[in-house]
Amino acid sequence: MSDQNEVKNLIDPDALPIVSTGKSAAQPKHDFETIAQDAGAGVGGSEIYDRYMKLLYVIDNSGSMDEGMAVSETPERYEWSDEILAAFRRQMREYLQEVKEDNQSEGEEEEAGMLWTSVPDNDEELKQLIVDANLMDEFPDIDVPKKRYGGFGKAQSKIEMVKDAARGFVEKRFAKYPEANVMLFGFDDSAYVLGRGISKDEVLNAIDKLDASGGNTRIVSAVRTAIGECKKRPSEVGAHHLVLVTDGYDNDPGLMTDLLDALLELHIVLDFIFVMGQSDEENNAHYKQKIDAIKLVCEKTHGEYMEVQTVEDFQQKFLSVSNRPMLPWK
Image 1: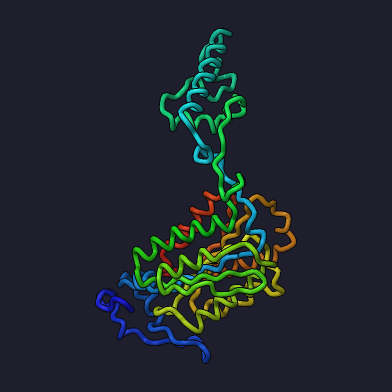
Image 2: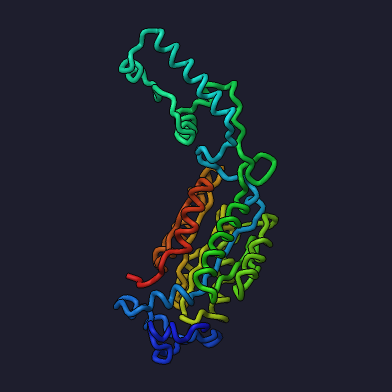
C-alpha cells in the first residue's frame, strides 16, 4: 500500500482481519466485510475500496468488434465551414422569402408544420437546427461531409470505441490514484491477460494491443478466467470490479449463474455492457436464457446489465460504470 498514513486516517489497516477465499486463493490484506460495514457507517471504507479495489476490464476482441458503431445524429458528426454555413443561411432566407410571398403568416407557417421560421445568427444554433430539422435533405445541393471515424469513412469501430473510452478512464484513474490496480483481458474462444496494472503506461500499452481478430465469443469462460486472477492475486481490500464489454452472444455451453457463488465469495461486482452497434437483436430470443442469467448475476453482485447502440451512449455508460462508487452495498 503506497500511502499507509492516509489509509490509517480512514481505517486502521492493522485492525482489519484477514480473510481467505479458499485453499488455493491468495489472501487479501484486509477484510472486505469490515470495510463494507465501516463504509455504511460513514467511517471511510468506501474511499479505501475505491482506491485499492482491483478493476478488471474483460473486452471481447472477436472479429465482429471491427464493425462500425451507430452514431447519433449530432452536429459533431459533420465537418463545418464558414462557406457551408453561409450557403445554408442564404438558401434558408430565400425559402422563407418564398413562403412570405405566398402570403402565409407566421402563425399559419407554424400550423403548416414548419420546424423553423427564422435563421439563427449563432453558428452553433444554426448547426443544431440543420441537424434537428433535416435541412441537409431539404437543401441537398449543400454538401456537408461527415467526419471519418476509424478510417475509410466508416463509423468508428466497436473495438476502437472501447479503446478510446478505456484510455480516457485510465488516464483519469491513475491521475487520482497513482497506485490504481487496473487489469485488461481480451477474449474470444479463450481469455488472456493483456496487462496487469502495475503502472499507467503498462495499462495503456495493453489497451493498444487490443484488436478485433479473434474467433467466437465465450463470455462465461472469460469471466471464469477473471475469477481465477482474483483468487490468485486479490486486491488489498478483498473486493473487485469486473467490467465486461462484448458485442456477441455467449457461445459457452454453461450459464453465467454457474459462476455466481464464486463471484460472491470473492466480492466481485459484475457490470456487463452489451454493444449492439448497427446489428439487430435477432438473436435475443434464441439466447434469452443466457441473457437472463447475465442480468441476474449483475443484479446479485450489485452491478448492472446495459445495452448500448451508439458511440455516445457507450462512452457515457462506460465512464459512469467505471467511476461509480461501489460501497456501501445495500
